[in-house]
Amino acid sequence: MTEKIIEKALKKHNLTLDEVVVLLKENGDELFKAADETRKKFVGDEVHLRGLIEFSNICKSTCKYCGLRSENKEVERYRLTKGEIISIAKNGAEMGYKTIVLQSGEDVFFNADLISEIVREIKKYNVAVTLSIGERSFEDYKKFKDAGADRYLIRIETTDKKLYSELHPKMDFENRLRCLRDLQSLGYETGSGCLVGLPNQTVEMLARDILFFKENNFDMIGIGPFIPHPNTPLKNSKSNMNNFEMSLKVMAIVRLLLPDINIPATTAMETLNPNGRIIALKSGANVVMPNLTTKDYRPKYEIYPNKICINDSPDKCRGCIEAKIKSIGRTISTDFGFRQVF
Ligand code: SAH
Image (tube, rainbow, N blue to C red; front, top):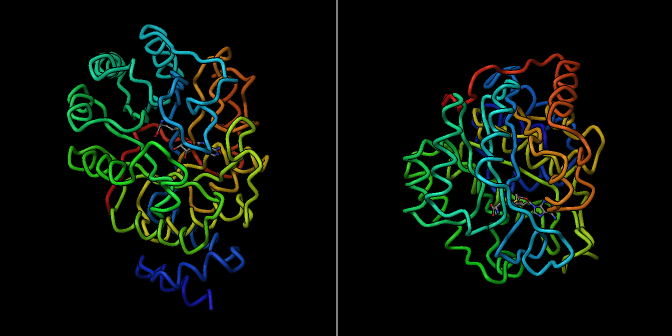
C-alpha cells in the first residue's frame, strides 16, 4: 500500500488526504528513503546553517504549550540590547554563517523601527536575515522588508481551527493566516510549520497541515515534536503518538510534496533523540539552525524543557554540528541558501 503511494509522490509530488494519512500510519522506513532521495535530487548534499539569536524571551502571548507564555512566572525574562544583538550577529557572520535568524517571544518593546534598525545593521555583514518574531501588522512586515529582511518564519502550529483556539486563548487563527499571506505578498521567503503530538491532535489533522503547506507553497517548513513544559497548562499532556517518529514522517512527506524547499532538522528533534538532527538530515532535511545566543541567556529561552546545548558556546555549536554533517558525507553550504524554485 505505502509503496504505490510513495511511487506516486516521487513522480507527481502530490497526494490526497487519504494517501497522506496512510503514510503517517504505516512504518516510515521507505518514506524516509524516498524523502532522502528527493532531497538529494532537488537540493543536493549541501546543508545550510542558519545562526539563531534568541534575543528576547518576553512574550505577551499565552500559547498553552510554550514555556515563554506570559503567565509563566517561573522564567527569568531577558531582552538583549540592540548593540548586543548586532554584536552576536557580527560574530556569527565572522564564523561563516550566511544567514542570521532573529527569534523572540511576542515582545512589543521591539517595535517596527527598532527591528528595522537592527536588520539594517546586520545586513551590512553580507548575510541573509530571517525574522521569527510572531504576529505583526502588514505595515510592520513591510518596514522589516524595506530594511532588508529576507525571510520570515511563522508556524501555523496546527491548521485545525478548534485545536488552534484551544491552544491559543488570546489569538485568532485567521490573523495567523493573514500574517502568512502578508509575508508572501511582500516577497519574503516565507516559512511555516506545525507542532506534532499536541494533545487531541490526530494524524488526519497532521495530514491536513501537510496539504496546507503544499497548497500555500511555502519556501521553508519547520516541523517540531511537541515537548511538554512543566510550567505550562500542558505539563501532564500525554501524546497519542510517538512525537519524534511522527515528526520525521510529517517532515519526510513535506519533502516529497515540496521537493525544492528548505527544511530544517529541528532542535526539538535532537532533544527527543540524541541523534535527531542527523536522522532528520537523512530523512529529507537540508538545514540546521545552530544557536548563536551567548551562554548566559540560553537556559532562559526555554520554550520546552531539556533543550540541547544550553551550556555550550556559539563556537562549540558550530564545530559540533559541522563535524556531524561531514560524518554523513554532506557538505556545509557557503552561499545564502535561498530556495531555488524548480
Ligand atoms: N514568537 C514567535 C516564535 C515562537 S518560538 C512566533 O510566534 O512565531 C518558535 C517555535 O517554538 C514555535 O513556533 C513553536 O512551534 C515551538 N514551540 C513552542 N513551545 C514548544 C514546545 N513545548 N515543544 C516544542 N516546540 C515548541
